[in-house]
Image (cartoon, rainbow, N blue to C red; front, side, top):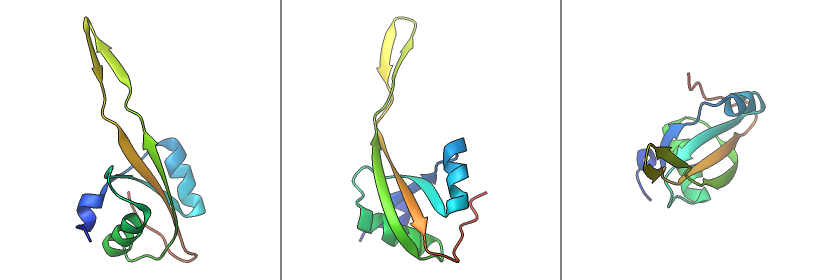
Length: 92
C-alpha cells in the first residue's frame, strides 16, 4: 500500500463539510489515483478511528480568467468518510 500521507492530502473545511462532522462524516481532499480501500486504510492509520463508509467524488477544476489569459484550476478528488459510532476526529 501507499504511504497514508500521500493518499490523504488535507481536510476540506467548508461550511457544508463542517456541518457534516455532527453526523460523523469528515471530508478530505485525496489523491486522484486513490480508491476507497486505500482511503479507508489511510484514515485508520493516520487517526485512531474505525471507518464505516467511504464516498468519493471527482471535482472538476474551474476555468479562471485573468485579463486576456484563460486558465484552468486542476481537477481534484474528495472523499467523505463516515466513522463508526463512538469515534471522532479533532481536525481543528
